[in-house]
Image (cartoon, rainbow, N blue to C red; front, side, top):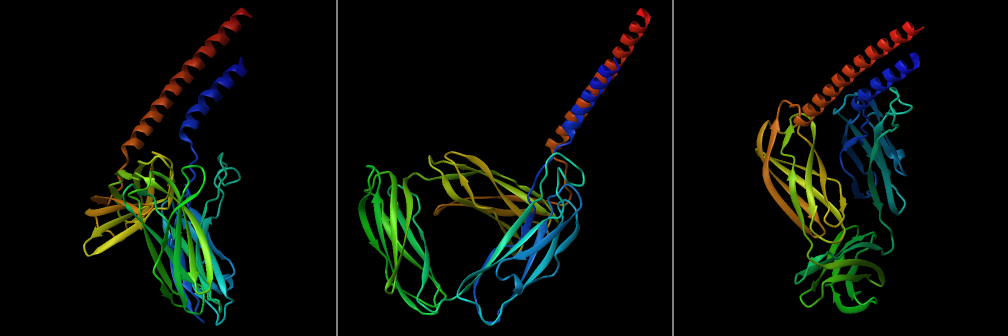
Length: 398
């Protein structure tokens, strides 16, 4: 009988605990951006970064660098002490390069992360073990003595009947100036085999040492069938060539901003969710949103990460906005959604509040948990009474 009572007690005790205790895993946030620049002898750059703690308790966060430029980098600190949940701490990075650097691309990776493991093996021994980290990259190009260039080719999806602007973004990797030109061949794949339907040529340009230029060509899709096409771009830089291929679609590409977070709070990094819907029957890559908040004479801008959308998918794009320098009140703001070579835009009012109000969903969840606990306590008391009555009956029979 004692075993039955003990097992019943543990069962009733564990269920409400499981309802209350959950493990939420969130990535640590970093305030800053990647960087790229052309090497100059003895150049020095100073960067300022911030680390946002998304932990469930006060915790130290570590920062560090690696890469072939790490010997030229100095951090103001490598430990950000005692960050509370939602707190932001700032640090600086000093990058002092030498007078000579071998030709090619060099990099420095900066990472910030939690110093403790949350979950199994962690201080509190919960059920999921994680240690979150996030990184940014600083790239430095040391120019080559010979003629050398690289490019990115863009052939966007377009609606039938539109002019498709194709572009080649060319960057010099050379200490010499070059004459550049682009040739683009467009192929149809509708019959199962590639058939060239048109050839395009860009105007020639001079590409100066260490600089970038964009070459444009325009495809008229009026007489082309809806479907998938392949464009092959060839870059000519003096006597050298380089080629890339891109697949693009002629159809009806469209995305929509359905809803968004319209209330944030002063003196914290806020998460703005931009709910976005794809209205196309193919996967869309490279989708992101930007938020612009107008506060007096200043405009605050923040961007989401880049995401991919499956056909007709609906999901939020997450924008982290630091409201430290935004005044309390209602502000005009704009959201621009970027996908392919297109954009969608909405305007609204962003409410900035001083005091964080408890969300109604949190109140509802708390009420449900308390109600469940009361029910389990009542069941526990009744069960214990029945056990006592059963024990008394057993004793009388003996």
